[in-house]
Image 1 (tube, one colour):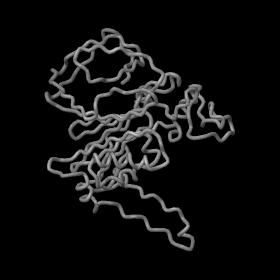
Image 2 (cartoon, helix red, strand yellow):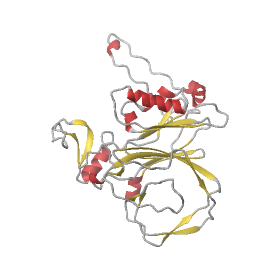
Image 3 (cartoon, rainbow, N blue to C red):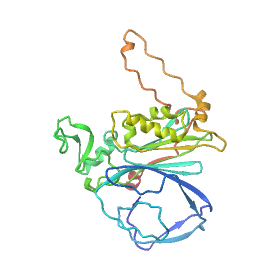
Image 4 (cartoon, rainbow, N blue to C red):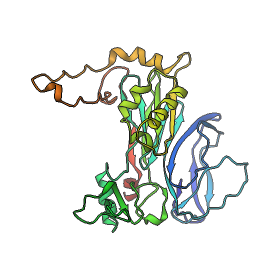
Length: 323
């Protein structure tokens, strides 16, 4: 979490929150050498009643200071140390039937209704995000692949190796926590999406880029729809181990189901009648030579029926800050 500069003595108003309200926080970090001692996935936080209009005093905090949440006894003091490493992170906050996802970098999340999906993150990888490339270049950073010499950026006209990166630093993403050696352009300002969980329930898959570099959102969803959450997470990690990819991989699966619903696979089986009709197959003399297209799951925002979902918000906090 990033704390922006606040003048000492500033007050803020706390609005009433029903006593006993619970929230669960789930996180998937993916860093270089940084270890995130984050709130354990699934930790429950209880909000106690606060009278509406209560004020608290905020003391001065240097802009850009970052802090990590630890499960520590009340009153424990934390010291922030500067470290050159960094991480991407995706957080999912579940409050009743509302799920809010905030992400930095390329650890992505997808919500599965059982027969449709909705992407809950926005990739900040330069290879996939032209606006992040433009932003970094406007700040004086160079955006290029690794040079064939493997010692820095590729020269103009040189093909280079691997995905686009920003230099100095060589990061593949423009958002993250830490990575001070990459310059001030790498920001801890997330993209936030929010959606109401459908009445029949849903599944959310959160994973680091080690998974998404190997499989698409649609393929990952289809691979594990018939499995329980624990088995599904293990299956996705096993899939990575059996491929040529060797990147470290973190996978977290959340099944949010109504009371009495036995499993997400049960939800998926009930949703089958609402799937979209398949596209007609190619025909003709050379049809057998065409590379088969990967089946894409329907976008939950574009279909009708119980599998339809609508994002309540989709906000880039950088644009909010600039405004």
